[in-house]
Image (cartoon, rainbow, N blue to C red; front, side, top):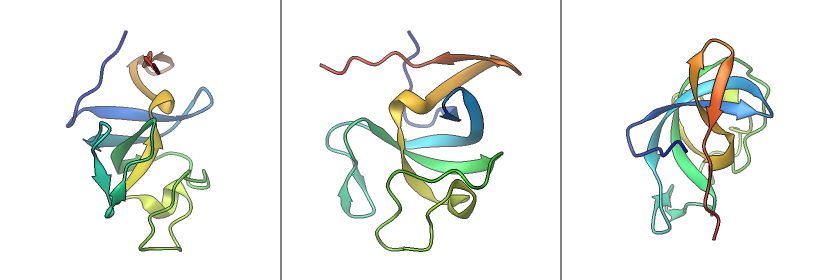
Length: 102
Protein backbone atom coordinates (compact mmCIF):
# COMPACT_ATOMS: atom_id res chain seq x y z
CA UNK A 1 0.00 0.00 0.00
CA UNK A 2 1.27 3.47 -0.89
CA UNK A 3 0.62 6.18 1.67
CA UNK A 4 1.03 9.80 0.63
CA UNK A 5 1.77 12.78 2.86
CA UNK A 6 1.86 16.55 2.48
CA UNK A 7 4.81 17.49 0.27
CA UNK A 8 4.79 14.29 -1.77
CA UNK A 9 4.87 14.57 -5.55
CA UNK A 10 2.24 12.40 -7.24
CA UNK A 11 1.18 11.53 -10.74
CA UNK A 12 -2.41 12.52 -11.53
CA UNK A 13 -4.47 9.91 -13.34
CA UNK A 14 -7.46 9.87 -15.63
CA UNK A 15 -8.33 6.20 -15.71
CA UNK A 16 -4.92 4.55 -16.12
CA UNK A 17 -3.33 7.44 -18.05
CA UNK A 18 -0.96 9.87 -16.30
CA UNK A 19 -2.32 13.33 -17.19
CA UNK A 20 -0.24 15.52 -14.87
CA UNK A 21 2.02 15.79 -11.86
CA UNK A 22 1.42 17.64 -8.62
CA UNK A 23 2.48 18.15 -5.00
CA UNK A 24 0.12 17.34 -2.14
CA UNK A 25 -0.54 20.47 -0.06
CA UNK A 26 -3.72 19.62 1.85
CA UNK A 27 -5.18 16.38 3.14
CA UNK A 28 -7.35 15.04 5.90
CA UNK A 29 -10.88 15.59 7.16
CA UNK A 30 -10.19 19.09 8.53
CA UNK A 31 -8.30 20.42 5.50
CA UNK A 32 -9.48 23.71 4.00
CA UNK A 33 -8.99 24.60 0.32
CA UNK A 34 -9.93 28.04 -1.03
CA UNK A 35 -11.90 28.79 2.15
CA UNK A 36 -14.04 25.63 1.97
CA UNK A 37 -13.61 22.12 3.37
CA UNK A 38 -11.62 19.87 1.06
CA UNK A 39 -14.07 17.45 -0.59
CA UNK A 40 -14.10 14.00 0.96
CA UNK A 41 -11.81 11.56 -0.81
CA UNK A 42 -9.62 14.33 -2.31
CA UNK A 43 -6.20 15.88 -1.77
CA UNK A 44 -5.39 19.54 -2.28
CA UNK A 45 -2.76 19.27 -5.03
CA UNK A 46 -0.56 21.99 -6.54
CA UNK A 47 -0.44 21.31 -10.28
CA UNK A 48 3.23 21.27 -11.32
CA UNK A 49 3.05 19.73 -14.80
CA UNK A 50 0.25 18.97 -17.24
CA UNK A 51 0.48 16.25 -19.90
CA UNK A 52 -3.16 16.35 -21.04
CA UNK A 53 -4.57 19.89 -20.91
CA UNK A 54 -8.26 19.19 -21.58
CA UNK A 55 -8.95 16.93 -18.57
CA UNK A 56 -11.84 18.41 -16.59
CA UNK A 57 -11.11 18.99 -12.92
CA UNK A 58 -13.74 17.64 -10.50
CA UNK A 59 -14.03 20.71 -8.24
CA UNK A 60 -13.09 23.97 -10.01
CA UNK A 61 -11.81 26.63 -7.58
CA UNK A 62 -14.78 28.70 -6.35
CA UNK A 63 -12.87 31.97 -6.79
CA UNK A 64 -12.10 31.34 -10.49
CA UNK A 65 -14.92 30.00 -12.67
CA UNK A 66 -12.64 29.95 -15.72
CA UNK A 67 -10.38 27.21 -14.30
CA UNK A 68 -12.22 24.08 -15.41
CA UNK A 69 -9.46 21.94 -16.96
CA UNK A 70 -6.13 20.63 -15.78
CA UNK A 71 -4.33 22.82 -18.32
CA UNK A 72 -5.93 25.96 -16.93
CA UNK A 73 -5.16 24.85 -13.37
CA UNK A 74 -1.40 24.58 -13.85
CA UNK A 75 0.30 26.53 -11.06
CA UNK A 76 -2.85 26.41 -8.88
CA UNK A 77 -3.92 24.20 -5.99
CA UNK A 78 -7.03 22.13 -6.77
CA UNK A 79 -8.96 19.23 -5.25
CA UNK A 80 -7.91 15.97 -6.94
CA UNK A 81 -9.39 12.51 -6.17
CA UNK A 82 -7.19 10.35 -3.94
CA UNK A 83 -7.98 7.27 -6.02
CA UNK A 84 -6.49 9.05 -9.06
CA UNK A 85 -3.05 9.64 -7.49
CA UNK A 86 -0.14 7.30 -8.17
CA UNK A 87 3.60 6.95 -7.80
CA UNK A 88 5.20 5.73 -11.02
CA UNK A 89 8.04 3.26 -10.64
CA UNK A 90 8.98 3.39 -14.34
CA UNK A 91 7.68 5.33 -17.31
CA UNK A 92 4.72 2.98 -17.75
CA UNK A 93 4.15 1.20 -14.40
CA UNK A 94 2.14 3.04 -11.74
CA UNK A 95 1.33 1.93 -8.22
CA UNK A 96 -2.08 3.25 -7.20
CA UNK A 97 -2.78 4.33 -3.67
CA UNK A 98 -4.95 1.86 -1.80
CA UNK A 99 -7.54 3.69 0.28
CA UNK A 100 -9.28 2.74 3.46
CA UNK A 101 -12.67 4.37 2.89
CA UNK A 102 -14.20 3.26 6.19
